[in-house]
Length: 100
Length: 92
Image (tube, rainbow over all chains, first blue to last red; front, side, top):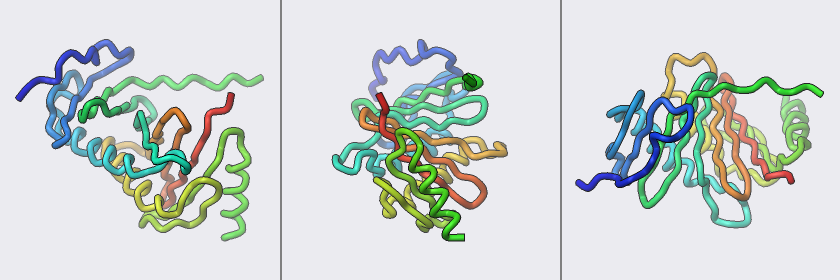
């Protein structure tokens, strides 16, 4: 099986790990918290498949470019490129809203 | 109760950038819809929210799911047995 090639996912700021998943749901590359995490990969693939059926713009058959799942302290950010799903797990430090 | 939900959906729709809003129950049944959101998507968003909850089973609150594109965002958040979907357009 060929590798995913250069991706520079390890340079994403505030990152705790990444996954690269192919169209069959197999993990092609991983690191950090997500190293060989096939459970998270399977859930995120299900989510990507479901999300691709949701129309964002009612006028055009356009689907999402980025899927974020935001928890209190971290988030998963996923995108699709050349039939592969790239997932990054990032620390989430929500800023307090500025009250004018 | 339906009047309260209608009023809340209207109030949400009147926020800046919001173009559509949908409310669904835990079985994917659409409870109310306004603007660009379509009732056909209610089952998919509830399934999406249920999958997202599996990512952190110990979490006390459900995550916010955000589908982003150039033309707008879709935000999904579940609370107890209800899922709310908000369609937003970029405001410049």
